[in-house]
Image (cartoon, rainbow, N blue to C red; front, side, top):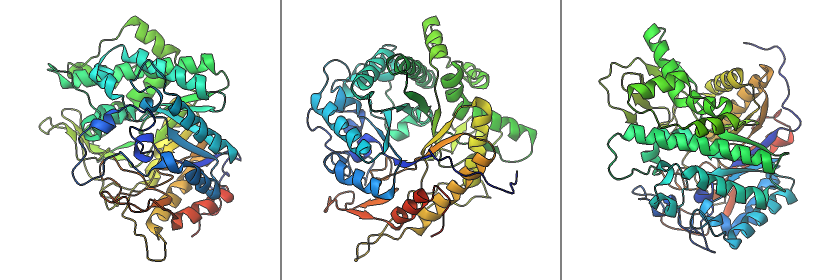
Length: 472
């Protein structure tokens, strides 16, 4: 659809950016924080551990001031479960409460709306030892954590996100390093989808608790949603794209919004002998958990063709779009798209297509909680970082948001990945996403000094103009 006149971004649009606790904070076991799965996992060879990250824990005032200088209206960050509850349940760590109180207050000092992610890939190690998400009681663990967050921060935090990229935890958990496999597991797919089910119920329960404790607050999920194309007009490929969309996307949003399992995804689980055990109480909780909006991460679309059942299941490296489900769909490269230095396809128009499809299906306000370009950035001798590639990537995606708004989609905000350089899950610090450069590499902390990239100044201008000035 072509438009003669574009609608403006809403006056209250949340321009900002995102991070996650384990990727920026550092201070991994400091001030009473317990270990999470991220602290004890095997680190990919050639990448940094997470003990210091970019030391946001000790630099948060400086970092928030830089975000305020850019003009941020919002900052989406996660709260480390084990900084609040070192053992996952039970005793609360007062130093953890103090840190996040200070961080939230620092945001509010600059009129930056804190958007808090409750769980971002950091299950407490103590709960991992007790079975992690494989246990039905994990629902209660998460509910306890949620209650502590709402009690301590709910007077100032008005926007909450439940679980970051639950679909990626389910589909590529081994790649992220978060999958807990109980001893004696014989059907791994069934075990994974049982854990996924517990997360769906835990999410719904957290939404219920939020609405009961904080009636003025808003809460929603934060999956990674990417439209899936058919590789051709062959009917078989079109059916494959419908299958893939259901398993990758709609399973998670149908459950979050409507409290039901997507029928195509359920048929897939039946075929794989992977149907989870679901209680009547679980279904009642899912039905009662009503999101106020949908947060979502978008990086690229996927393209699939019909599967002949002979290919291996799984993911291609860290490619979130390149998954294969034998007998269901097979991912292929899209010849119409260019790729980043790290092999990720770039599809701004697919961004518009994704939000249009989501809004058509769910009719809830949409909040972009991640979108960005990982690249090799270079700090020049005079302290500059020239990143025109990032500016171009972000500009093209912001243009598509305005087109989607003109299409009638209710867009709440844009919080790309990431506010500041951080430790990427797969490639360490060398794969940089931030508007703010941090002087360190994977095995040398250097000065940890912060530098403004060219994209920092560009984004400042975008925010000042409420998205109207996207020029260099």
